[in-house]
Image 1 (cartoon, helix red, strand yellow):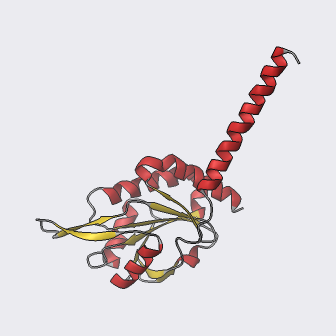
Image 2 (image 1 turned 120 degrees about the vertical axis):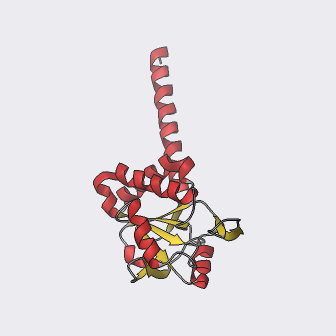
Image 3 (image 1 turned 90 degrees about the vertical axis):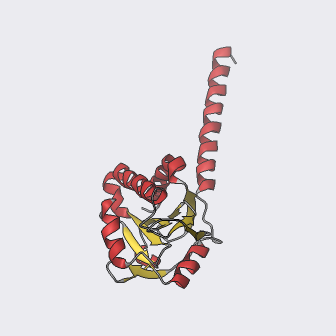
Amino acid sequence: MTLQNLIKVLSITFLIAVIGHNVVAQTDRLRVRHDLGGGFTLSGHHGEPVALQDFRGKIVLLYFGYTTCPDICPATLSHLKLLMKELGPEQKKVKVLFITIDPERDTLEKLKNYLPFFHPSFVGLRGSPLETVQTARQYHVQYFQEKIESEAGYLMAHTDAVFLLDHLGRYRGRYQTRWTLEDLIDDVQLLLGSAE
């Protein structure tokens, strides 16, 4: 074998290894987690009961936050708006669900007025304090009140993560959108392709 042929063979072998590693890494990142996530039924911001199973056939991006959040929640929802824009026509196959962790202050009316600032298709969900705790626990989301000296009275410290659920409602990943937006876009597109 000539040196030139040997270089070609080694180059092809290296390329196959790199591609294979990337596919395995992405597939591993998107593996189905049966120990996390799960179904729920809460009140939608138009007053109707909304269940996770209502979105079978769609990719779901789930976020736990609250409407008076001063920074993290609006930043995350803005990132999700950019993601939807990036998806173009495919965005109709994706649904963003925003579950309030502050049902004491976040009425359905507040959610209804808040979510359209980011995207008209985003859905706000509200449960009782117990339903909120139970749903958050399924996704390993933590939150608690932090008292502050202001008119608001308190802030909510909470897990900052978007959860990716496939077209069957199965947990596929957790993303901090400020750091892993590109991964989230890639993985949504991958799931959209596999759901066809």
